Amino acid sequence: MVLTSLSPQENPSPAYICPLDQACSYLEEAARELKLDRNILEILSNPRKVVTVSIPVKRDDGEVQVLAGHRVQHCDILGPYKGGIRYHPAVTLREVSALAMLMTWKCALLGIPYGGAKGGIALDPKSYSIGELERITRRYTSELIKDIGPTVDIPAPDMGTSAREMAWMMDTYSVNVGHAVPGVVTGKPLSIGGSRGREMATGRGVMIIVREALADLGKSLVGTRIAIQGFGNVGSAAALLLHQAGAKVIAVSTGTGGVFSDVGLDIPALKTYVAQNRRSIVGFPQASAIGNTELLTLPCDVLIPAALENQITQDNVDRIHARIIAEAANGPVTLQANQALEARGVTVLPDILTNAGGVVVSYLEWVQGLSYVFWDEERVNRELENLMVQAYRQAIQQTKVRQISLRLAAYTLGVGRVAQAFTDRGLYP
Ligand code: GLU
Image (tube, rainbow, N blue to C red; front, side):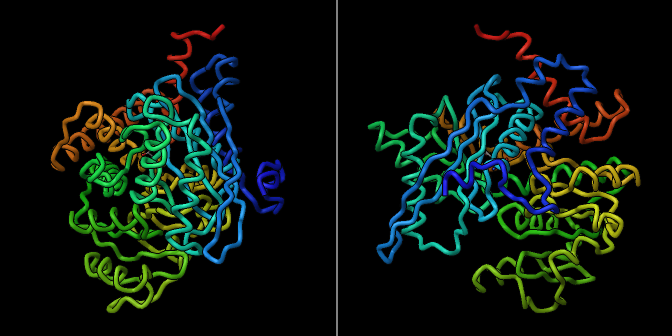
């Protein structure tokens, strides 16, 4: 299992778009724009540490299954490694490596003192009991015990994980080192040092960036027609906050189907419906059914892909009608589709900016923990707002100075800051 997932032939299908190749292409484009020293580019193209561990887990029926768990630490030049832990069947080492690299640029772009990392286990959380998930998470954590820590590498939730998994990780780490270490993870429950506002943070960040982009076009959120693919932690929080700000969320979808309403969905009612229907949005009253991929091509002002990578591709890009695409997921627009959208003058709000709200509030959680002073939600949201708006403004300024797209602007800022740190610190030995 472990060896299979480490193989370079992870996905032999010709239609497969490798997220690591895409991440490296964006890095190379930024390097060309910055006229970056090729030695620094060589260093930044490679992760510093790649760890794959075997996770033997006893299933509830007594059988033992061995899973592969990854943690990729891309760069720690600006501070401890930081990034989520993903539980999803499509997790591969190459995907985790790509996402670790994105975290490096994301943290640098937002001006927070972290490097980039990502972890993941290829599993479908729905196929495991809570007890099994706890055993998997604890064993994964103990296998990584020497590689993580509050000043070394700080995991957080990502797709398929939440505060619950972070509590198990924090507990396992703490028991192993002999004392409570809340700072080893972020996105924890409030009871053990989590931050107010963390759960909604990524969605709030998406709302802020969409609001700013609309304002630059002379528009406001009020009455803006928005379609959202994905109704997990990020998609549902963004939907709620956009709805509260007066936008019309006309469609929402998940892997099992979606719902559409021309007058705008009642998002609070939809959230209640999902909670009561085993997390499914299908069948929500006062709305018609719509497919998960059909949603992408709906006529709307803003399209928010908030699910998986590679959703807007060469195959459907000609049918995308939105004026603004906000990448709430990581890498939902492929390289080729991105070029086609830019050529058509569609504003693509890049993932490393748009979905940075989560790691920003992770940072605020870490700062609160280190200072033993915990803030109210209003303060957390205010600090998040300031950091997001500042990064957006700097990226817009960069588009003007360099006459480049917003994605390349965001990349040049993130990559440029990391490269500058390499130049200043120098290469050891
Ligand atoms: N998983 C989130 C991301 O991809 C949050 C990471 C964090 O808070 O460290 O940005």
